[in-house]
Image 1: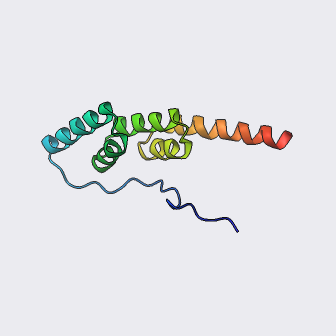
Image 2: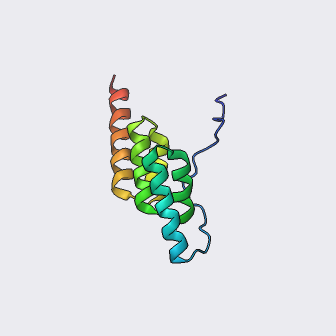
Image 3: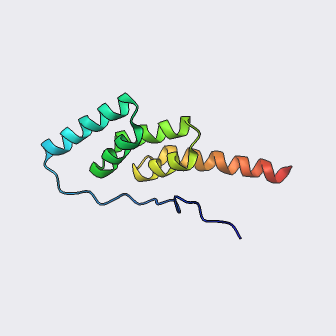
Amino acid sequence: MAEIPKQGFIKLTAPRQPELSSQDRAALVRKGNQLFNSGDIETAQKVFLSVGYSDGIIRVGDYHYKQGNYMEAFRMYKIAPAPEKAAWMIDTMAEIIKEWMEE
């Protein structure tokens, strides 16, 4: 029997966002960008997800993709939403599986 990953299953829904003023949201987005640019991707991801900042979530997804963490990248693209990036990943994964099956 396969074991459940210690981090659990992939959650594809966006977290509920708190009610924020536009000034508070902008301040948090700026903080998330500072964190991202300084290399604190994990905290930046939390900030971007909490305020629903799509561009930041997509950048975090791109970072995870470059690091080879494809499932987390896919999750970020689905939450953002970035349908073209998610669709590209699905097509790529399908091609890989197709190649495996032909071997």
